[in-house]
Length: 424
Image (tube, helix red, strand yellow):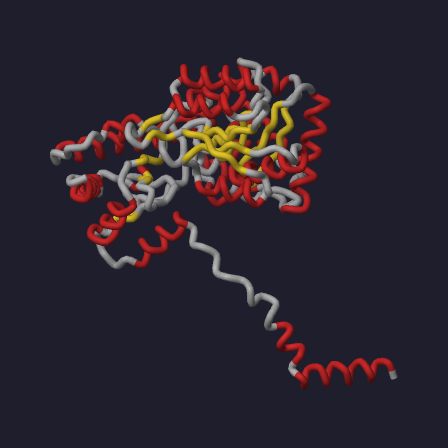
């Protein structure tokens, strides 16, 4: 009887239209999300039928033919592990071997912190996932803190700490007039921040500007952080990819370690091993002692559990095999230097081509900057002209992905840049 009554009520409700009207309101308030500025550039480029189109907006390495690259050391590992890989879950903290090798890369091959087990580290979903895990960790265990983020920075940094509900402040970094580092203003902001503040720093190849502090400037920054008791969280997405030497690219971190800081690092193998789609990364926090490191790691794993539970296995095995095999690592070091040198060479070619056209502007910053990106100094309006008149695509802040510049398009690109900037 009760069942028949319930069935009758459902029929009546359906016939009245109440259920349909109620369900139709569930997602009515959802508005389309704003387009990602970088992915939007790619969409527009793909839709352009022009045979002369050039995409210098994508943050992924391309060879001199504009094609994606799979490193030979990666191919060798894939052939070696083919058919020998089971599909079992990794631990929540990820591949122990991959994490060990990754820490050696950042902290040093024989770093005392690794031997003393003072580092809490977990495999992450590339550098983005490492940043997000840390942001959530910061919110949970330092709920009254905020994060200082450089101006400008990779746009997703703001999204990450915003969604983790960590308040954000900014600090000066880029100097538009010189196309270089605004070091004086940066130091003032560090000095004026409340003691014990959290700062996000780019370890090398700053994205999007390509402007890095000198070694001496890093030492001054480290000294001031020590005086103020600030915490440095390094995002290191380009180790080896910036200069071609992983040791040189980790210099900022080594300076902070030598000065006795407890730091955090987000590492990624997207750029320096070309493992973009594998999402292999690592989050590490240097702690006071082994006991603290055990506690911190357990909490990082606890944060990962409801997010994704366990990280993926294939890319982690590729990384651990390459870094753990002396011959494969030797091949990798050569290949990462080839990528870095090509980009450095394209910087020189772009600058020389623009200067040969008689540009009245200085283009020294093109070769002074380092890494994948060049902060050109072009205005949004000039970038719009490049797109509309020359079919050249980049983000509207004037950031050029040097990986998209080739010997085949550098002259065309230089001419277009000269045309839109010569009357500036």
